[in-house]
Amino acid sequence: MNDVGGSEPLRARFLKSAPGLADCPPDDTLEVALVGRSNAGKSSVLNRLTGTRDLARVSKTPGRTQLLNFFDVDEGGRLVDLPGYGYARASKQKRHLWHREIEAYLSARHCLRGVVMLMDCRHPFQESDVQLLDWARASAMPLLLLLNKCDKLKRGARHNALTGARRRLANDSLVSVQLFSATTGEGLSEALAHIREWLGDKRGLADNG
Image 1 (cartoon, rainbow, N blue to C red):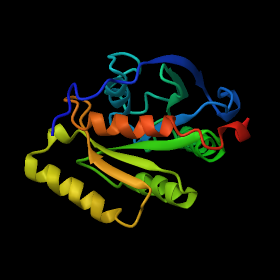
Image 2 (image 1 turned 30 degrees about the vertical axis):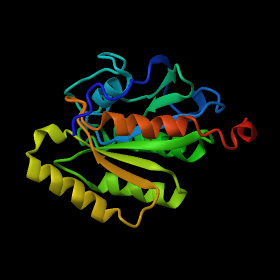
Image 3 (image 1 turned 30 degrees about the horizontal axis):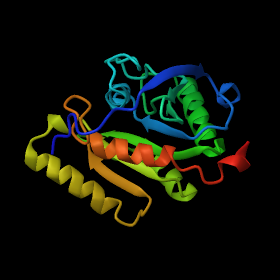
Image 4 (image 1 turned 45 degrees about the vertical axis):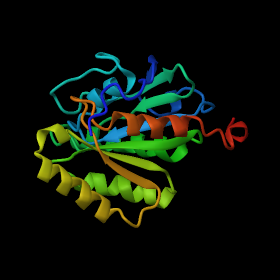
């Protein structure tokens, strides 16, 4: 199903970039993080979710996002664009630093309510993807897996990609899986519904200041 126009985008504005956890904004506002391998289309997805063309930079060069980027959502809460992982051309030291900062953010932010994980539906479940899924499982963190770039596949291949992913994650009750296309907007309404639900979940917020 194509969901173009099916839901209002999240109006958001850039807040700040942080090289590490110590530089992040105060941990007092509900957050949803976007994660994914380099070149999975994370910046394009963020722009689609927010109804903009340039909120996040879009580049064909993997590894462009190297900081933790925070965006205030007009309805309340924040979106956080985390550095892409798995970029082979970055130095080993830089890859280790990116992974360390991603792990520190995901593990330490009390106001994190959910993670939107991007996979290229043509190349899902790479080793680093599996590691992040393992973290989410161990942390009992709700996760929405978007099989992005589904417009690149024919109908049968799209069905197989979605069915295979759902079968693989069938025992993970906190993981939802759906097809998505940042290009056409397919899956947009469902993804926005998940994010809005998370950003409206204020349980325990007052205790995390």
